Length: 235
Image (cartoon, rainbow, N blue to C red; front, side, top):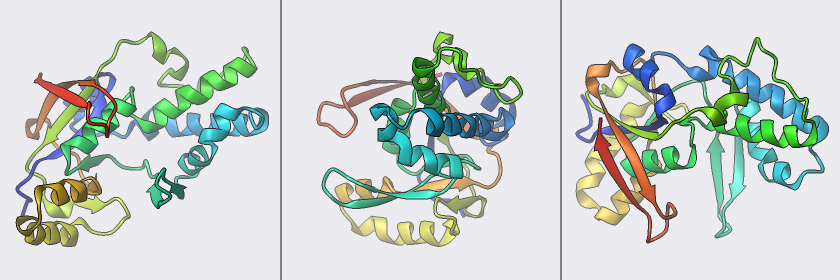
């Protein structure tokens, strides 16, 4: 049984050909292209050389969590604590299109790991211009990404079986989705929107390309602000 709503995935055009060839979740670039290994290499280098760098210290906690594939409690601007899971061993889809849009907007290469690798690489390069990522793990050419043209992409996903999904915290998706079906008809649009922002699911099997629609994404303004707006153009 499938939930009536569509699911969404935010990414970048640099992954588009791969997704069209193997489906969404057909490969995981964090492992296939060894991007997670690159992150761990750069994190180790940063811990050795960047502890006096204020820009690195701002991202140190989350970088450590990414490298260790763990979780971290972050304090928000309103003082509330938010628990963030940094697991990149799967491909995730969101119930909210806005969550996918914000992700694609904030992660210019469509990958949290790749974006963090690039940030770390250039921070390290400022310290040591001769820094080099080992060739055997730098399959994605992190050091050359800035030379590649790319644009954010939103993928609409349909025909997903409940049992082919797992919640972001590792629990089964079926129970959560049944709860949503029983709850959504009785809550306001605003409450539903807020609830959907936390509905992120891991794919347990690839989604074939015939169940995917691709959209170019353009945005203006800052996500979360009143002036934020977006436009989707089907590809």
